[in-house]
Each structure stands twice: as C-alpha cells, then as structure tokens.
Image (cartoon, rainbow, N blue to C red):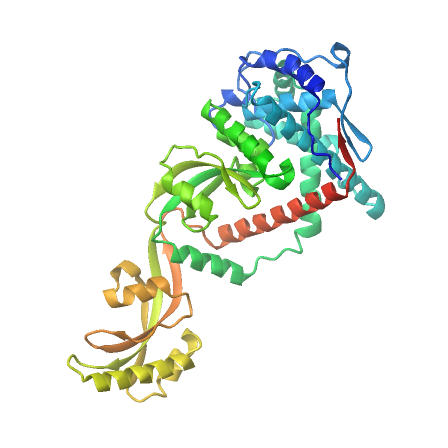
Length: 457
C-alpha cells in the first residue's frame, strides 16, 4: 500500500529549499537548446552554461530516508539529485510554488524505477534470463544522448556535474527506462496484435472526419493514478503551465512529466481531428489559436496540457469509391409509380450485404441497372450523392436517392483521405501498437504499486 504523502515533512522541504533555490536564476541545460534532441532522456547545450550551485553530498546536510520501497531505501540525497536532474532536463525552474511539484514528480519517478528494477531482478532470478541493462548498454545510450547534443559522453557528464547533477542519477534513470521497455516489449510485444479491422476502422474514422477541423498539437498528460489523485494532478498541471508560460521548453517538459505514449517524442501528437480526443479536449482546442498553450484540462483519468501548433479546415480531400443500383424514373412520374419503385429498391437493399454482391442481387430485380461509379472526390459528386458519400461507412448502402434520372441506391465501397499529413497504413498501425503497449505498461505499474509496501518520510 502506498502512503501518498510525498514530501510533506517540513524539515525535509526546508533542506531541499536551501539546496535548490540557490539555483533559481541560473540557466538550465534544457533552456539552452533550440530544438529537442532525438533521445528522450536528457538534453545538454552545445557550449557550457553557468552552473547551478554545487550540490553537496550527505556530509553537507543530514542525509536521511525519503522513502522505503519494499525495504529499498530512497535517500534524501537521491531525491535531491533527481530533482536537479528533472530541472536541468525539463527547464522547470525551482520556486517556492513549483518546488512541491518538482519534489513530488521526482519522488514518484524514483519509486517507479525502484519497483521496476525490483520486478525485473525477480524475473531474472525466476526465469534465469538477463533483462536489466548493463553498464555498457547504459554507456552506449549515454553516448547517443551526448552525440545528439554535439558532445562526447565525458563532456555531457561534465556539463551535468557543473549543474550540480550526479551522473549516477541519470544512469539510474536510463537503466530503468531501457530495462523496463525491453521487458514490456519482450513479454507483451509479440502478443499484441493490431488487426486489419482496427486499422480500417481508424482509416474510416479519419475519412469520416476529413471535413472537420484538424489540429496539430503537442500534449502533456498527467496521470492521476500515478500522482495520487485528480487534485494532485490538477495542482501539478497548473504548476507546469506556469513554468511553460515562463519559457520552459514544451518538449522537455513532456519527456519528463507526461504519461502519454507521445512523451518519447516530446509530446508531439501530430494532426488530430475533431472528435478523436475526449470531449473536454475538443472543447479546449476550439478556443485555442495556433501558438497558444491551454490551461489544464481535466479528463477521466488525468489532466491534459495542450500546445496548438497549427489548425486547418481538414486533413485533405475525401476520396470515395461508389457503386449504385438504379431504376429509371423520368420527371413527372406519378407518386404511385415512384412509391412502388422506392419499395422495390428498399427490398433490394435488404439483400445487399456488401459491395461485392450488389450487382448480382440487382440483376435479380427487373428494371434495375447496377454499376461501378468508380472513385471520385466527394467535392466533385452531385449534391444528391454527396451527403451519402460523407455519412455512410464503407460497406453501407443508402436509402433510395431521387435524381432527375430516377431512384438510386448508392453503396460506399471505399474511403480514403488525400492530402498532406494523412497517416498511411503503417503509421496508423504503429500508433495503435504504441497505444496498446503503453496501456499494458501503465497497468503493470499500477499493479506493482498496489501490491508494494511504499512508505514516504
């Protein structure tokens, strides 16, 4: 069971304030970069920046226990180093208002990492396999992070040290992230399946929303289950919005604080259509202008912070493939004859199960002519057909439609969006897979937290 009173000891808060608030005015590494790096863990400048005040080891202040995780100790020094690492890599500045949020997020991250490594070492013992990343693998990841910032590993670690961050804190974070991702992907990755029906359903949903507003967004999701409830999630999100408004880089904040699968890409969610996200999020997006940051948006399991990069009327043109079954009826046909023709087509509609059997079923009805209308942009269709093409799902058949030539049943045999930014089959598959693997990981962590003995001091 978790004691959720993270960092409530006033003496401990005073110690951290003395150590951390001396660095309020100093630039941090994440603030010095113009664009987010390719790696998700940490960032560094291409040239040295003024350092934070040096962080003393335990002999400079009384080191004590910040938390116990199944009897595994997290010290106040561990927590202070993680708080510094979070500030340096996210650009969030320590103030009297933001310090509790920084402390809480740092402690939650350390607790999660301890739980992950404890679970992985248990699996290693039970199954006689190697999961936890080795020192060589951690160094290789550090090399990649440093290279993305035009530094060697030694230079990168030196920059962190100048900012008062222990390299061991970063190494622990990297080791836990790499190992946990390896375990989740290895255990569940091959079991998860993104079916063609899921991909087609997503394509159809995107096609149906092609005419709706489209938003290019970046997101931060604060998971209420992870932070200890909605009130804490709202408080944390409010503090993050204040820091973002003061200049903290959105991508760096997303990497450190967001629980969304997009965290690894700096919160970049790409283009989304109206209706794809929660109604509360849609309502907020409607009020934003490109370049604006939202206020915290509470949803069912957490709180969103959104940055609207751009907005457009639609993702592109909507292309449809249609077939029809028609009865010729010239203008001036009596209402009785038209009603009889309508009944005949409605009876035919019940026999059409898909586009593949439309022609065969139509051939059984005297006077009905069937044919493939081919592929066309919805915008180019006759007004009578346009509504059916936009609203019907693939495989559905319209009710009889009256035109000057007669009555028509129209079947939608295919839909696709054309235009820039439209995700293709593989992109949709990867997005759905990422959502599934993220959900598995979050549920796994929830179960570990619920079964653990976690005590904070």
